[in-house]
Length: 304
Length: 316
Image (cartoon, rainbow over all chains, first blue to last red; front, top):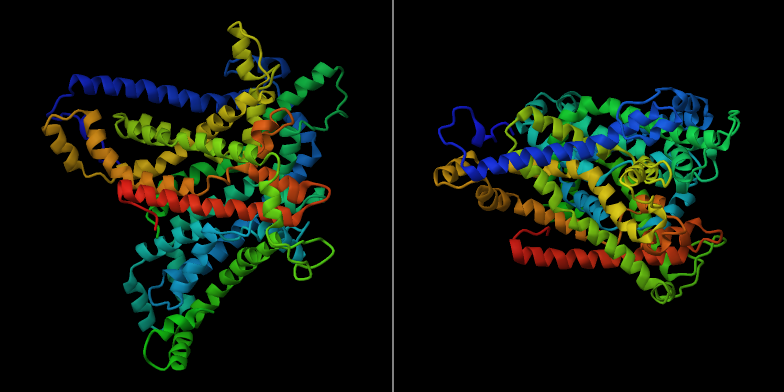
């Protein structure tokens, strides 16, 4: 992407025409406005979470009367922390299971000498365009006896065919075939080749796909709402957040607060705080894997 | 499973071929058996279970014991008094969301001509971030910002001398809120694919165009847009293919009894009838699901044909 700015290389022999100058000025203005539109709400949420009730109503990005009441309320709210624990379990286990299953599918399909490639690929592609739908899938989970167990959140989404194809494309294009031939001459079996050659060379793609799965698991709520309904102890954070943020059903009445107004304000600050707290794990992951995004999306774009 | 077919194409003894392939690549078959098993259990078993759409399935009996009722449930859905309202709501929400597809392209083009690399990187990094906000939190933020009393938007309106509006209770704002928040969340991330497509444009083309006196707008029109056209076409086809299965996860959270008239879409209706009600109607829900898939496939085929004719690039 760095080769792009032909128009502006220093000492470029061709001067900008007037229309180009206008374009570049507008470009600066539009992108700056765009940056503000995207960033302002994000920063505002963080600011509001540090405010004391009343100052939520100001537009400033610096908290007035900063206080930690929001976070205090969150820390005292037990359901949030059981939900947090559950979500971490679902995220970690789900990502590990997903990565293993996806690799088990992507690696054989990336091998040109694997004869079963065609039929299995078709079998995968079919599920991208057709599905049983909500109700039959639910009934299947019920018949398997997975309702109200942790497995019902981890297993049904174990493999995304799209991610599998991205991984397969990466393995096929970035690991030279000569390596396979050499290893086979040296008597290396298929599984050993996967373990000692393919996996160590697939680091970046594992990071991208792992991030996709992890974020997906952390953010999912619908499956959990359907399959776990009734067993509150297993609820992931997202379902608890739904109660607090969407159904406005935060149970903080036992925190001895004087008036109804104060309660309402406390509730508002707490909502902002809980938004920040729930986004933390993903925001911590984000900078580490951010550089792989473009790669992941690009491989996805040339799939097939 | 199906590998005998592949092997059978070769003209040598079939059994021997299979045996050799299995012995040579047994490890690969062992590995792939796990995902295949996964697909069979979690994807193909439900597809097989779709037949309850044509049966009178009840919790007390198994699928096979349930009597066939033909198209009863599909007909029930089509004759449902709000059928056209559901179709209209679903279609309009998808259509408006689809209309935002030029936004990431424009963003990609602007970033592509941004001379300051540091600023460009910053815009990119920050604009990807909202993509990672979960649906629940996104709707939570929306509700906070649009709150009548303390919401950011209403504070601005009141400061400007206007009257506070209870946005979530007004049906006329629902689609706008849905589409704009979706745009805010997705525009940066969706632009990645176009940015990478634009970086594939050969610099010689641009140099030649500059020598010929083409300004930036002309170069965008004659060089950049034709380059990313196939990508645009394919993404459009894929979006049209899921016209009737819009993001019900978000819509379901944004619904309330006051905006229900425009916010009820087919998939939320399916969920409420088929699972969430006290007397779940499994067969009815499955029939609606099947109906949506059917329409989706038809849409996909039509749009695929049209874009194939227009731009020469199609999905299959």
